[in-house]
Image (cartoon, rainbow, N blue to C red; front, side):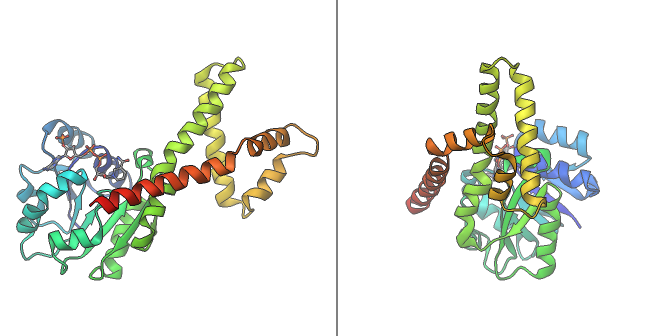
Length: 268
Ligand SMILES: NC(=O)c1ccc[n+]([C@@H]2O[C@H](COP(=O)([O-])OP(=O)(O)OC[C@H]3O[C@@H](n4cnc5c(N)ncnc54)[C@H](OP(=O)(O)O)[C@@H]3O)[C@@H](O)[C@H]2O)c1
């Protein structure tokens, strides 16, 4: 299977590193990027082939990954269509906000097209990716997409109508989680612990707590109860969080991101 990437920035580099780490030979991956520095690094670290042009990267490819910024995709989509010609590679776009309808209009509705939304944690192989295929994509091609994005984390098929919701809880919420970790560490710093140490402890605790939610079969509220001894210390913290609108603030943040996403979509 031959893979090709148009655009070799942050996200493509993370995915390529994940692919190679999971056993895909770098010689089966070709990349094309406008500036050379990033592809030189990928060639040195992952053994990928570097194509001299967009046309060259598309030639003979089985799976084509469009990993340029959305505004760049607008500029190149027509030439990508021309360079593909009559061939039928599986085309994956990771461009935020670019719908299946947009991709089919630009590339042809006869093409197998999958829209994928990875997140920034792909850099540490822990992306929570969502994907949506068009009607041409076969089950076997869906498996290819799942296999590809499992190399950088977890992957879930979602209806395109849920992409905006997915974008909030998987795309934006890493920023919420980073903020929570930093605030916790800063509070510890204020109380006298070195910030670096506090950050490491807070981040590892969030990591472990997420694992508990995923693996313990217990509802998060049951886990909260397990940490709160009657008349103990933790229940004071939980009560203070609730008194100060912790839950409603998160719901409001969710709603704000979703509303902004809808406003951006409506402008297009
Ligand atoms: N970063 C995220 O957290 C995230 C999450 C989900 C989805 N995405 C999506 O992933 C895509 C890539 O994002 P990113 O963060 O990886 O961006 P990025 O780091 O800026 O990477 C984009 C790359 O595309 C290259 N490029 C620009 N024009 C090109 C062209 N005509 N042909 C070939 N390469 C070209 C750029 O090259 P030079 O800069 O070297 O010129 C750059 O290396 C975007 O569509 C974004 O919406 C990103």
